[in-house]
Image 1 (cartoon, rainbow, N blue to C red):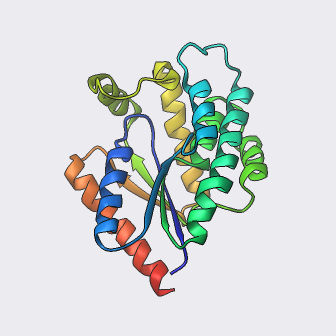
Image 2 (image 1 turned 90 degrees about the vertical axis):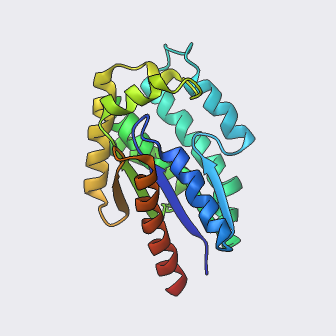
Length: 213
C-alpha cells in the first residue's frame, strides 16, 4: 500500500484532536504505520512559526502576514515530514492543513479564497490530502467547550469575536462545497464516543479502499 494522507479540520473546539489520537491508536493496533502531526507545527521550524502566529500578544498581526506565515510553516512541514512519511507508505493523520487557511484567512479575514489558495498552491504544489474529515460544530458550541477546558492551549484565535468564528464556519462550508468528493462531514455535536466511532468508520473505509486500489 502506498502512503495515505488524511487531514482533520473543524472550527475551534470541534474536538478533532482527541478523536485523531484515538483513531491513530486503533490503526497502530491493526499493524499500520501511522504518523500523527499538526499544523501549524509538526517540526521545529514550523513550531517556531506557530508560536509567532498564535501568541496572544501579537494582536497587531496583519491578515496577509498571518496567511503567509501559515503557508511558510506548511511548506516546511510538508517537505520535511509529510512527504517522507507518505513515501515510506505510512498513514499520515494531520490536525489541520490547507483548508484551515482557506476558511480562516481566505474567508474570515476577508483575504479571498482564490488569493489564499494561490499562496498555498505555491507552498504545497499539488500535494493535497487524499481525504479530509470535517468536524461540524456550531461556533458557539465550540467556543463554549474551549472556555470550559482549562487544560486546552489558549491562543490568539480563541480571543477573536464570535462573528469571526461564524465567518470561519461559513468559510468551511464554502471550501467543502468546492471539493465535496474529498470531504467527509461528521456531526461533532454528538457525544465524543459516538464521534469517535463515526470517524473510525470513515478512516477504516478510506484505508481499505486505498489498500485495495
